[in-house]
Amino acid sequence: MRTYREDNPETTMRLVGLLIGVRVPIAAMDDLDGDVSVASVSLFGGAVEHDVVCSDSRRYDADALDRTAETVYNYHSNGDSTTCSLIPLLSFDDLVGRDGVDCAVSFSDDSPPENWQDVDASDRTDGHCDYQTPDDGIVDLVVEDFRSPD
Image (cartoon, rainbow, N blue to C red; front, side):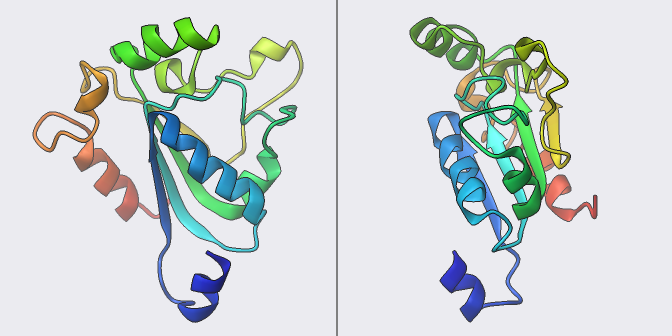
């Protein structure tokens, strides 16, 4: 991404991830640490622990995420059986794809990055595959978020 940004400085860059794939844009923002500016990051049904992006997290640097992306949209749904039942059963933890980020679990003044926006899509997604369904999913919300100046 650094090389691409150098070669294409005027290009608007956006990152997207679904389920376990949300780890890729989160890790990219952590690694980039502000070296490359990303307009937005859209996470759908994220299968990462609910506190992994909090400021006290040992896994990712919340400040790096904040420096890299203008806005991180975390689209989550408590109707998503994959992130609500299956994966938590396997990982023994709640996920950002179910109820959003939760920094209170660490019993500290921990907080998510300032650019983090949890978007509850429960009323529009009955299952994990519904996020990207054009007629019933949240594609129109994502496009609207792409167009918003924040």
